[in-house]
Image (tube, rainbow, N blue to C red; front, side, top):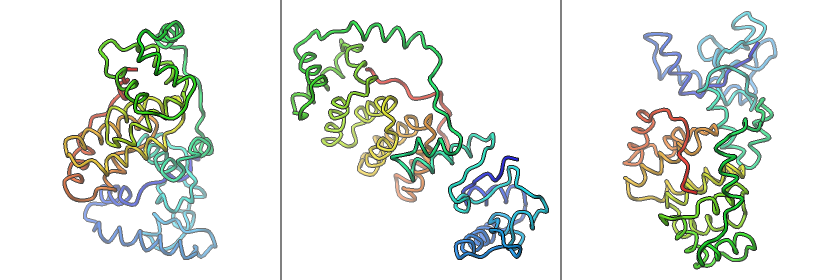
Length: 298
């Protein structure tokens, strides 16, 4: 038995209408909301068990057993709000992504522990020859310019992020002859002084797509997905140029999707009207599946 599969209210209504031609969507939605309200108020099945909201919406108040005659659900849908934070296994990537997104959104600071509670395991990847080659390059890399020495000195010793430090980082980032292995190793170390530089840069320019991309790469080594979501959301709220906003929304999606976060779904909820809403809706309907975000220069 795999238990209930949590589904969002909108998703349930769509699925129901797809399977029951001629049903009225507004009536189905209203019935689900009514059953949810009853559950919140403590209404139970006549047998004493909690209501099965999805079933109660179309068959009258009751638990899963009383409505279906089966002892336990096996991949049957239940409205996510009625699942009380408990998620069940099912081989459906869309549902799994929705589960992960809800956990990350509601528990940004302890999402790893929450994900472990629903069965996720954190494992090291198989040996990566490219990664090993990069590690060799990073091990022998040394500063070659005054700007690089200033930057490395800060990364090793810390201190306040001055304008000179930030400029040294930006100069190295955009240089056509950047010492990539030298700086890349600090990303892979999740160096806190490097993070301070990125946060200082974003404090000065919260919508800078390159710095957000750098922060995304940094997050791969620092388990800071919750913070990354915060910064991308803030950037999308503050960006006024629609073309840049569209690029930010795409980057947000690409840089968090592999970690189980559905950024476009959240942006559709956040921007329900206006030009930004239209842009996000278009992206959510047309964006292609992808293998993963591209690496930043470092």
